Amino acid sequence: MESRLKPAGFSGNFEHSSRRGYMGSAAVLPAAGAAKARPPVDPCCVALRVFVLAATLAAAVVMAANRQTTTVQVAGAGAVPPLKVTVTAKWTYSSAFVYFVVANAMVFAFCAGALVACRSRSAVVPVMVGDLVALALLFSAVGASAQFGLLGERGNSHVRWSKVCDVYSRFCEHAMAAVAVSLIAAFADLILLMLTILTIHKASSYY
Amino acid sequence: MATVDDGAAANSGSKTAGASESGAGRYGRPPAKCSRVDLALRALLFAVTLSALVVLATSKQTVMVPVVLRPPLVFAPVAAKFTHSPALIYLLAALCATCLYSLLSAVSSLRFLSGSASSAKTIFLLLLLDALCAGVMASATGAAAAVAWLGLKGNSHTRWNKICNTYGDFCRHIGSSTALALVSSVLLLLLAFLNAYTLYRRSR
Picture 1 (tube, rainbow over the protein chains, first blue to last red):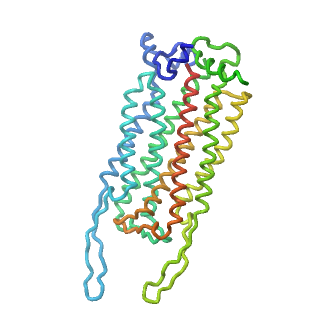
Picture 2: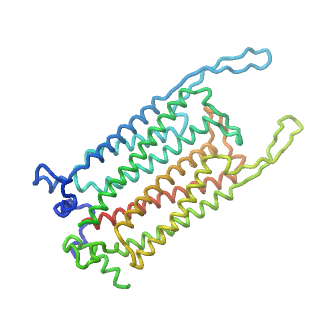
Picture 3: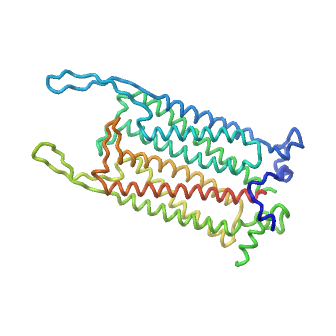
């Protein structure tokens, strides 16, 4: 009965000897004594995590540094000569881009924390939950800003929203690059999550 | 089946003590309480996605808009439909996929309850598909919310005027559909948490 009262997921004492039977040669550890406290860290997972870290940072920085100032010619009416107006495009002008930067920064912070915590066995479930939330955040941010970018690229004739990317071409290119990098990061996060799930699945199936 | 509840809960709790009491212990069925919650969440997901689909598909509004702005005003009917925006079409497709998926996965969840087939593999596959669906729904919700926000507030910097003062009914439909899509992505995340926790508890 006392085993039911114990919090099932978060107690740190894991049976590694039972897992090593399956993992066999994969879990050759340098120090057998350290194996109890330190689980084997999958280098693939760490590499993916570092990739997500770098990609979200790059996306956030590229988007936040994105700024373009151009001059457009406003046609004068009647005798008034045409006027040159300086206009600026910034990421803060669009709420979708602000959400994008904030979401990428949050995922970056979480990934840094997870990279530090991945050596401890008790962090498996919190990291997985965080990965799921990070996945949802990244995908929704990518969806929102890709939609905004598409509107800027093509406009929408039905509601008379004209396209703006012919004026702010460099701004649009940078924004699209940031969105693409963030999309790749989101897929990498998905693969990372699936690898974690696969590890847990193996541990649960092969005793 | 009345004893399954207590038996399964005790069984999952004492997994560490005895590796397996019987042959079925290794691939023992998930605790019935968990799978009941799982089934309820999937039914809720189906209801939410279906209502979001209906609300989105019925969002059509036609208003009379002046097309000539000089004194003899000429009015013409202008319709707003969800097919005018690629983001809303994407939302429709994602909602369709999630609705279908929730039905199919509810069937497999029902099989857990009856106890005929329950393996770690099924939970694993459901978990993977849940995560994938959550990603798709999250991106669709983000895109639809961005277009709904633009419609509601407009964007003065790019001179995109808001349209919700003209198409109020249409906007309400889109907004409700987006909110329901948000609820369904949260439900998918909860399902993934639940399944992951079930799977994790078996690994101890």
